Amino acid sequence: MIYSMTGYASATRELAAASGTGGVSVSVELRTVNSRFLDLNFRMPEDVRVCEPTLREMLMNKLSRGKVDIRINLQRSEQSANAGSVSREALGQLALLERAVLGVFPEAGRLRTGEILRWPGVLAESGVAPETLRDAVLACGKQAIADLIDVRAREGAQLATMLIANVTEMEAIVTKITPLVPELITKHQQKIVERLQEALGGGGGGGGGAPPPRRASSRCRTPS
Image (tube, rainbow, N blue to C red):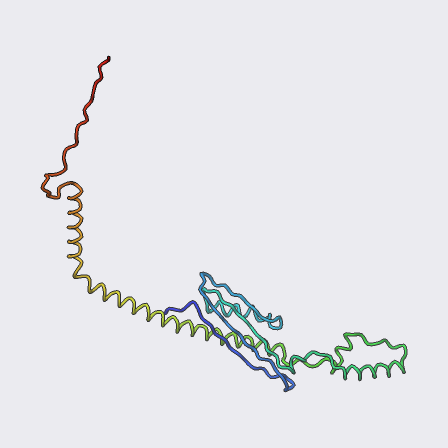
């Protein structure tokens, strides 16, 4: 089977946030052009960089040559974009608690930044778990690779049909001119003979050929 070296495929999945609000749209795009060797170029957010080795292995198992651009996009909803932001309301409540504790226990140490950020409710929960995001990227990659192979196979079939049509047309032309080849060869040989005869002076003209070359006469001077 003939496969086209160019092709494009994409796959998208919508992921809902664990909280039920917001989410992430995951898309994987594959674009291939002709190349002597297999050349894989990845463009992806750092959030899903961990998926690169697995995607690379999947592509190498299915493709043997071509330059392949792999683009992974994460489109977060407004609610998910705000995930990880600090809740000022939770910070205010935590500050009140800290002041109350210090009022009773003055020797108690103040909260550190890491402890504050780890306090429940201070940081908004992430919209989609990293494992869920990774699985979605790999699933989209698998689907996109399958679609890419299918696209290249269809384009390859069209190319094969076009090549067969051209070959059939050329065979028809050859069949048509084959009976004329001996006659064409004879005519061409006759032309070559006639030109050789003209070049050698045997063209049959009335002058009997070219005149012989004139001898150069030598003169001797006598001394005066």
